[in-house]
Amino acid sequence: MKKIYFQEVGLRDGIQVEASLVPLEIKIKWATELIGSGIDQIQLGAFVRADKVPQMADTEELFRHFGRGGKPGAAELSALVLNEKGLERGMKCGVEVFCMGSSASETHSRENTGMGSDEAALRIAAMAKEALKAGKKVRASVQSAFGCGHEGPVPAEKVLTIVKKYLEAGVRNVGLSDTAGHANPHQVGQLFQAVAELDPAAELSCHFHNAYALGLTNCCFALAAGVTYFETSFGGLGGCPFIKLPSGNVCTEDLVHTFQRMGIRKDVKLETIIAVARDAAAFFKRELPGTIMKTGSIVDFKGEE
Image 1 (tube, one colour):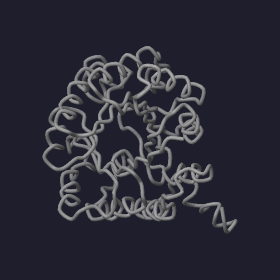
Image 2: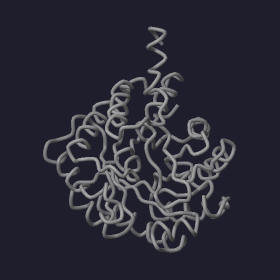
Image 3: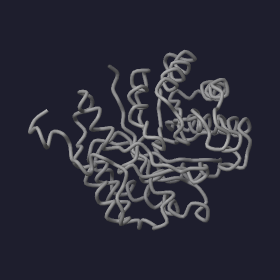
């Protein structure tokens, strides 16, 4: 089996819809602990307008902090960018991986970017070329790839057309995002297989939301379809603010636990991620969706794996 990569998006997608602003020092604490857990990539934030998404106002400061002091581990530091201005800001403060994408849903695209789906895809492809030319890594995703909360089903042909634009721009890491949580396991397998047929050498990434309790199952079907990059959020925090029914992401510690039970990535320190999730629950003063943060690992009950 190819190596599996865990990509933590809790500090961006996870907290972006939260009303309680997370102070910079707490973000640094959570990021430091997550880096130390052995997670492969940490998405520190997004370069977006602070008046639109206040939680992301200190993204530059986060990158500069880890740029000055060095990272306490090997994790790559990524950020979401939606436009050329965001890309420019990220270039100036040490972003290692640029995450970008456009939506296969016309309604979601206009809500999220103010542009139609086709225009947004072309713009992202051009941005990807610029970032790659600068020597940066790029992951380009198709949002609402499995369905839209406003429009319902999204044609697979629309998704594949956008993927082709990314591949033509030179992007090798392409992802499908289940922004509204509509994906079902068979659909996941079929669509990722279709993407792989476009370019067998492409690295496949997935991002599932758990609106209808299928997130973990969809991850397992994505794994079987050849996906090697998995975006998740500690505690199951998160949700896109520009969709009809925002729902939490697949929970990082739940997926790590699931994969470790399958013999995959036992090097990742599960207890460290659980501790961050519990800390987040205490900060937000509510129970979070994650399961393993409440039950603990099955290893805790058996004494061995």
